Image (cartoon, rainbow, N blue to C red; front, side, top):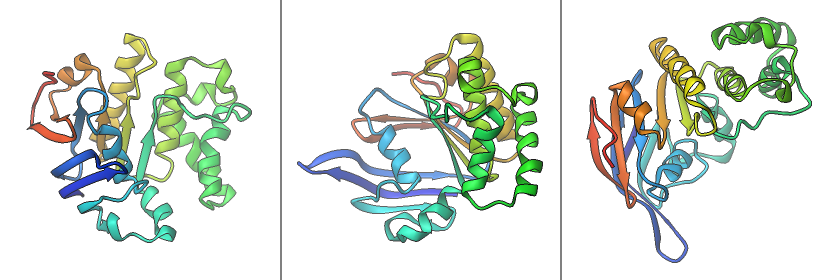
Length: 226
């Protein structure tokens, strides 16, 4: 599903973001990617969604060779990958329903299908009673649920969650993590990028630890020990 073969990414000035990364993530895994700030986690995400290309080595996502992917192919790749950010990126003048359905509209889904899919997504994230509200009318945890529903719009094979609980309290954090676990159990591969030691250690799933752009630990049922 996701393969990194001897991947290095450098930026001008010979700055190494990641160095000689070797990873193989199987379909259906739940993987936490951890490490201090500046260790390469963000670059890893950018390589996975083809926002960046490797300077050396190869990145393969579901059969796509990222170093050789054509610009016109990138949108098709990204429909296989749902991305969840810490800062929500919701459209303030659209309702919860409209924020989710807009992702489908942009992809060219017909209106009749959008009206069918969007309520299903709202049910998955437990927001069917909030569909008419605007982002400023819902809590931070609910906003993140909207983001997750939007990320699921294309039924992606992979969900990449970049610090999805960074702005949430402990109760909302647990609810969002439980939702990601639920999505994973339905067969979606989940990559959780986080600083939250408590969350990672409670999951008892695979943990990949980065330091200075290198993988220093890869444990099947690991802990965040840095």
